[in-house]
Amino acid sequence: MTQVKTGDTVRIHYTGTLDDGRTFDSSEGRDPLEFQVGSGQIIPGLDKALPGMEVGEKKTVNIPCDEAYGPVNPEMRQAVPREGIPEDIPLEIGTMLQMQTPQGQVVPVTVVEVSETEVTLDANHPLAGQDLTFAIELVSIG
Image (cartoon, rainbow, N blue to C red; front, top):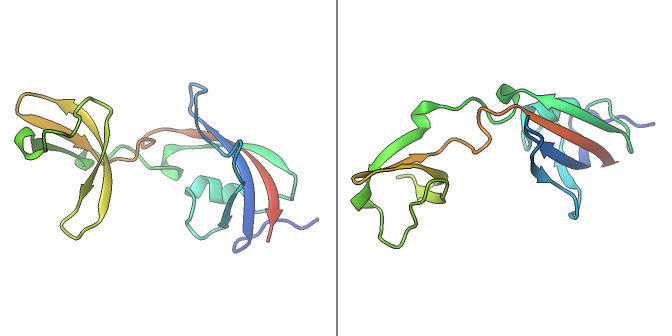
């Protein structure tokens, strides 16, 4: 049987869960995820789990946050004046918004705190600081 090696293009089905068992993402009902192993297109911990797998093989991998979306970075939180946000933008805690950097790059942020004068936005990935578990099945190589 052919085994996955770095540089191969693979297709996998997956289900990602958090430590409490909640599913945060899955390919169920969709086409398998296709990517090149070792190219940085997926989180490092999942990339490292694939070499050596054979088509049809299933495995479950536990990925610490350092090999997933990283730890929560406090510097990625920023308080902005409330009057600087247009009136039509919802400001409930948990609302996902998009900001633009001075260079024009779009950055997703989450509203994490709202006061009379400020809104605190968090640009950390929503899964930062979380250890993740993936159930994966190798569908094809090449």
